[in-house]
Each structure stands twice: as structure tokens, then as C-alpha cells.
Image 1 (spheres, rainbow, N blue to C red):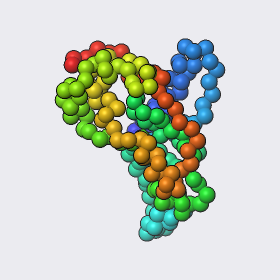
Image 2: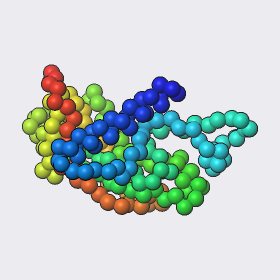
Image 3: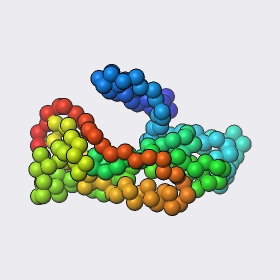
Length: 194
């Protein structure tokens, strides 16, 4: 857990540094609105464990492992789309613990992959060239000199984020606050073999 917590703290610091550099480059004073991580392990509070109908024993600790999910108990959550789809800012519905427990005290962090990373390049090279992947349907630019990553994270490799968000709304887990379209996607400047 100590190594996990170190990695989690590093991710928080890394996101803060990225935001600071972007703000500085754009000559903007930025302040954080939210910083919610996904892919982590967190202890469950006693009342959360009861809501999940766990056999709660005195002195027993319970843990929640989120993989591709964000906590629904920390306020606003950004559900990112791919570089070729919208991203959504949502408010988890937190009227009571029972409602939050329905979603495992979590909401989706994106749509999830449709294709394995190792399959993307072969699938897309039949129909697309690198230059086709360096811009999006929104007219935004993609900066990624690592060609394998450019193919692995192509919008076609992901499920439909609009459907995922609509399902979360229909299930009564979230309220939609805003949608965002990508303006620039920056992955890496490092060159790589195709």
C-alpha cells in the first residue's frame, strides 16, 4: 500500500505540473476544479461496506479496487472520451449511500476499449494512414510521434462514450453538467518505429 500511495501521490503531482505548465504557456492563472483519480485501491468506510452487503466483521477492513472507474463520492467527475469524441463533466447523484452503492461508489472512467492495443495497428492500417490519425472529426490536432501509440489510442479502438454516459444517466447514477470537445491531443514527442 505504501508503494500504491506513492504512485497515487506522484499521479496527483504530475497532473498538477501539467496543468501549471499549460496555464503558464497560455499565460492563464488556473485553479483546480477537480482532481479525481481512477485505477486505485481505497479503503471502504464501515457504512459503505454495509451498503454493499458485505459481511462486516468487527475490526475487519474492506478495500475497493477501481480499474477504469472514478469515485462517485468526491464531487464532480470528468468522464473522458477518446481524442475523437466528447468528454463529459458529470455530477454523481449522492443523495444517499444506497444509491451510491448501486454503482459500487464509482462511475465509469471513459468508455473502455473495444479492441486490444495489439490489434489496433493491423486493423487500422488497412484503412488509414498516419496523417489520418493526426487530426480528428472535430478538426483538432493530435501530436504523437510514437506511431504505435497513435494507432493504439485511435478513436475507433474505443466503445461509444455517448452510450456509456447515457446509460449512467438512465441508471440514475449521474447528472450531466457539461460536454467538452477535444482541441489538442498531446501524447509524446518521442519518435518510435512504425
